[in-house]
Image 1 (cartoon, helix red, strand yellow):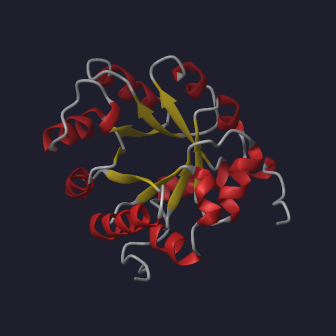
Image 2 (spheres, rainbow, N blue to C red):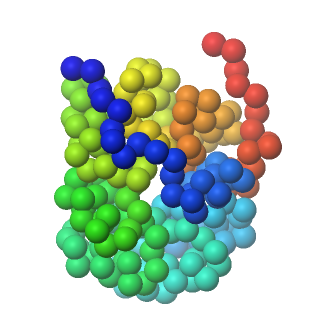
Length: 209
């Protein structure tokens, strides 16, 4: 079965397009320790993970006041429920969007006015087909494709079906980010703080294959 270009595939939300035009890197902020680095970095979009539910009401609004666009990884926030109430809770405190592997949460996020990012792990062909089906059903605003080194091995049809996508996992250098962007990613996600300063003008040229 050939993957189909999903109906919702389009340019990202204007906030994201503007941010990625300057710094095409999503900061993967895992826990509270890297928050200071992110607050002082030019990257303005983050995926916030592993922050306990009790700290989210302080962290998310503070990032919003700093002009940051915050996606909360619902799957990895200790104490946060996996239901509509949790999404309403995040929306109320100012989160721009949510990240999840769960189709049900992606489907619930859109009606609440949240941006949605579906995380998919591509480990083999059968897993890829299941991921493509979930993306087509959930119609997320963005797809987080993991791990990034699999992206060059995916067919152009599969990549189009997941567009717009963010390449994540093992993005450790400017070259890694540039490779993902060259393959069609709108951004690369990384937990390496120095990459949160990588502007589009500083991207290395694509390598010859």
